[in-house]
Amino acid sequence: MRVALVSDLHGNEIALEAVLADVARHGADQIVCLGDTATLGPRPGAVLARLRDLGCPCILGNHDAFMLDPALIHTYTEAPIIVQAVEWCRARLSAAERAFIATFLPTLEISLDAGAGLFLFHGTPRSHMEDLLCTTPAEQVDEMLAGRSATVMAGGHTHIQMLRQHKGLLLVNPGSVGLAFREHVAGKTPVLMGHAEWACVEAGPGGVDVQLRRVTLDRAALRAAAAATDNPLGPMLAAQYA
Image 1 (cartoon, helix red, strand yellow):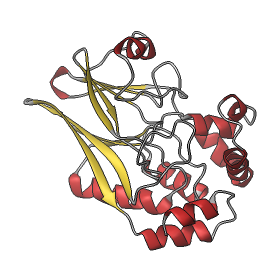
Image 2 (cartoon, rainbow, N blue to C red; image 1 turned 60 degrees about the vertical axis):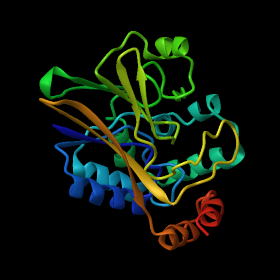
Image 3 (cartoon, helix red, strand yellow; image 1 turned 30 degrees about the horizontal axis):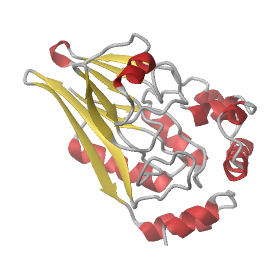
């Protein structure tokens, strides 16, 4: 059984289509989106439409929650450019698109083959705003997992791919489809890489395997898409893809 994990799409239709093509080539029994679908990038509506057509389970990320609760972003950041980009996105979503986001799940548990289990979230099981990194101390990881346990536990949020063993569990971050960061931002301006990221979790008689995958993107197409939008983040994105 193969489960494809995609996360942090952030309105990047070009990257999403490239990842879905790679998933099709690689093969997957199920696709799950780990959240942060529409905001920051140039094509929020197109990304949501693609997810709706796929019919895949979607986890509620913090940026998805910002579309449902306008005040919530101020508990996360006061950076003017991010707040403006989130407000730009919300203003362009229809009531039907927001209703679709409202169907997203806080967490999801999937039974894999051979008795293995997969537990999915956005940031951590207890919060879609927490950063779980390869450098997070083990004691803090225990607190973040909030008593949850599974063979593989996976979330996104940080835009950094990760595969970490923690007390026998495999902790996975598929990275970001739409905005792959070179390093953890921690309040700084991110440096974007020219690829999209996803992960494949495979379980069978031989055990469990996790692959972190990267798909090279057309930087000129990304630059053109960013330049064509009036999204407040458009100029920054276009400059990053120069």
